[in-house]
Length: 261
Image (tube, rainbow, N blue to C red; front, side):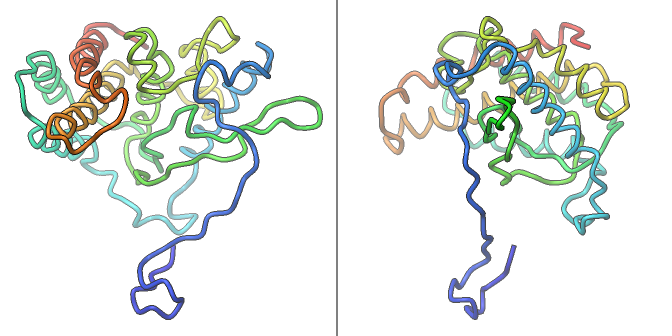
C-alpha cells in the first residue's frame, strides 16, 4: 500500500499494486465440471489449510501489528453491524431482530486472535492445477475487510457459505457457491478437522460464529433490498433479494440453538 495523496507517483490517492494470477474461480456448480471428486476434496482441504496458515501468521512479524485491535473485536463487530442494520430498516423483521438480540446476549470470549480475511470463501480464491493434475489454491482475493480480530469469525463465514444451499436454493443462487457434496466436496466438519490439524489446536464450538455470519449476510441483503425499493439498485434478481433475509435470520437462530462443534 502506498499513500500518494501528494501526487508524486501520478495517482493522487492511496493505492496498491496487484499482480495477475492465472487460474479460475469456482463460483457455481458448473465450475466443478473439469474436476474429479478427489480433486475437489483436495482443493477443499487446501483452502482451509490456507486459512489456517493465515491465522498462524504473527502480525508483528510481518509488520502488521497495527493492522487492527484484537481486544474488543467481537463487541465492536456486533455494534457496527447493528448500526448498519438500523440504517437499512424499512419493514418489520422479527426474526432478524431476535437474532440480533440473541447474538448481543451471547458474545463469546475471544480465545484466538490473528489476521483475519473477513470474507473467506471458495469463490474468493483462484484455483490452479499443477502438472500432476493436483489442484491448489493459488491466491486469495478480496482483502478489503482484512484486519486483526477473532480467528473464528473467518471459520463462521466459511461455514455459512459452505452450507448455504441448506438454507434455500435461492440463497445459494444469490450467495454464489460451487460447493456440492455430490461433486466431491467434504463436509464442513471435515474442514474443521483439517483446520485444527493444520493449526495444532482445537476448534471451539462455532454456533455463535455461524449465526453471526448469517446475521451479517442478512443485513447486507436487507441493505440491497432497501436500495432496490428506492430505485437505486436495478437489474435482474434484485427483486428477490429481500425474500432471503428472514430465511437467513432463521438459519442464524437455528445455529444458536444447535451445538455445531
